[in-house]
Length: 186
Ligand SMILES: [Fe+2]
Image (cartoon, rainbow, N blue to C red; front, side, top):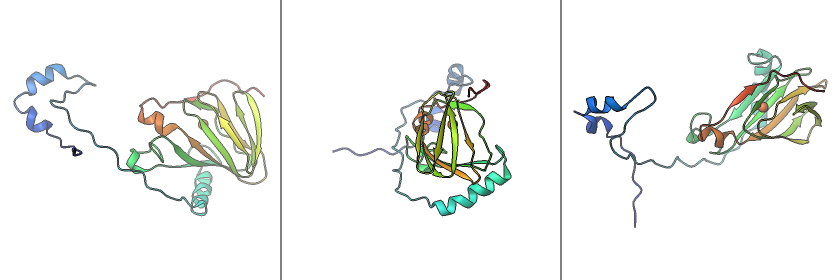
């Protein structure tokens, strides 16, 4: 038999009278804990459904506002139990990307990998210098650390849905994004 221990922070109580000694050890990015605080598992992620009909108006509005990139919007989802924006599950993040006709995302890369499905419209993605044309229902893969950008070459809005392993990388503290400066090879 065992009992799961719940976390209780006793640092203030235990540190009383020891501050001077402890401050000798601590630095800008270093703290001392004076006993092992038990960690607790995160609450489980709950099953859920995200209604596209509710997401679409938000995507359109964000693209119109163009605060990040003109004609482009991205809406991602996370479960608060995984930590702020860490994933829809502890390992995976998912989201919709919107591209107005003629819109194109800035070339960039990241160490998460992504699998995309085309929900609506048509266009192409340049992935590692290679052009991949897509239309509704197609699936394409952007491996980790490869420069990519997406563009809508159709007359109508284009919408992609992607799942990435960014939750895993962010939870490990190693998720990174890079803006690419190189010219895109056609
Ligand atoms: Fe990306």
